[in-house]
Every structure is written in structure tokens, then in C-alpha cells.
Image (cartoon, rainbow, N blue to C red):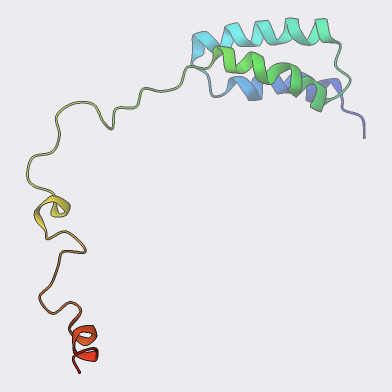
Length: 100
């Protein structure tokens, strides 16, 4: 089923939805120019032209999870007994098995 020009014209708008408004306008202008230059015959070809172009206009958000002060108080992982700590009962069955 061949793609209509309306489907191809809607693709830059869909790809620009995740961009900030100033980047969105610049991307849409660059996308229209790229589509005119490429002469795409379908949506798949248009997407292959526009996807790398969109990545150039997209700025990932800043990761603020590890910024700033750490939470106060001890972690249960730091305060508790380590897993695998020796226990006086550990290996009692094995010791008794070989005790003649």
C-alpha cells in the first residue's frame, strides 16, 4: 500500500513532538528540507532520513537522581550483618559426620 503525501508530511510533526519548542521549529524546517531533497517514496524511507536528523536536535534530560546531598541516616545494607558472615553453628553437620 503506497504512502500518501499526507502521511509523509505528518511524520516530521510526530517526530518533533518530543523536542522543546525552539528545537521543534528548527527540526521541522530541516526535516522538510531533507524530505524535499531525498524525494522519499514512503513512510519507511522518510523515517530513515529523519531519524538521524531528529537525534541531532534532541537533548537528553539531565539526570538529577545522583546530584546533591545524600540522604542522611545509615542504610540497612551498611548497618546489618553481612550476608555470609560465619556462624558458630555453620558446618556442624559436616563436622559430626566425620567424627568417627
